[in-house]
Length: 282
Image (tube, rainbow, N blue to C red; front, side, top):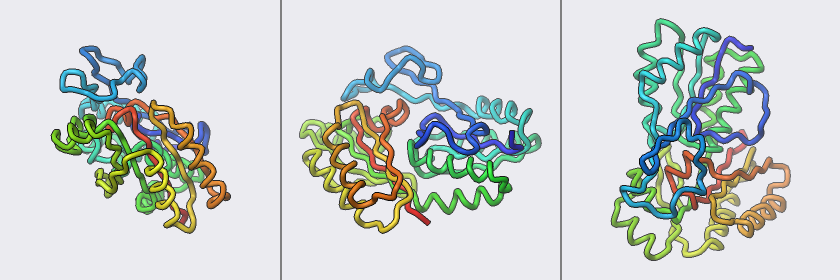
């Protein structure tokens, strides 16, 4: 066991089940409040159980750990580790990073804690955590691991399209009027994560146009380290086939992975989200 722990949150999705340093990665989970019932750590609730569109009284909510809970996690890790690097989902998407700042201040006399706002989530977050874990397994000190991760943040790009605009409205990413009109017109807008914040890019009218946009986006890069497709609960078999073929033809040496949307991302952006997440090669 290393003397350093990598901590992240349960929105993370890894590109492989096992990787160097995985034993020293810990995950801080969100609870979920849905239809009057609390699901601790989201257990027992799947993205497929979420409605396609939500009203205020049907909206699922991520319950972000309070500073006291985060402090308890820091203190429990201090029993086994001498240092923590915590890499969390973008602070523009959930307030966990800010809660951790409060907790880290309270714990600073017990264990050194480095906090990193990943400015991403899901597989983008997973790629950064995997990098940190691999550096940790290689014996790099915390300062160098932090430097490597912060440099890598600028190489992670995310595109997300979703038909669940009411989810974006509930999360505060777009206004309610936009969500209502967009869902009436069956729009599936594409957003990018810019400095961790959802930024609108395009308003395609069908999934084929979405895949064309994804492919055009990939074509802007010469060298990619990883390409990941995150699929929501709607069947995206044809679209994933198209992207898989495109990657094989144009990025044959690049690692490619496909993922089913996890519960935190489904609650933030809707269960019918389709996302492209990549890491550019150094």
